[in-house]
Length: 120
Image (cartoon, rainbow, N blue to C red):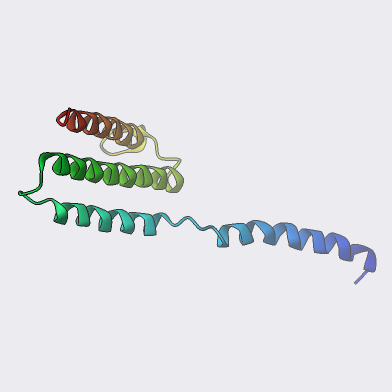
């Protein structure tokens, strides 16, 4: 092999492998996040007892809503990454999934605010 081409070949190999190296070392795993949210939600639900004080119940419900909100954000982001080409017109239900999830998140936020107002 011609020695003049070695630096160019090394550059091309490095350029091609570098992005793979980045994605292989990504620390964010949405599937693990979803499992973590499921576990947290179950713990909050199990801890919700009838004999808790009102403020403890409200805090517990707010925590459950926060976990659900985080789960929805993660699912929305996964859908956007996995299916960015899917538009409402392509859905057999004629539904804009991202808009629906965003609307649900806004409704959850209102629910949290209303729940917190019970304590005031």
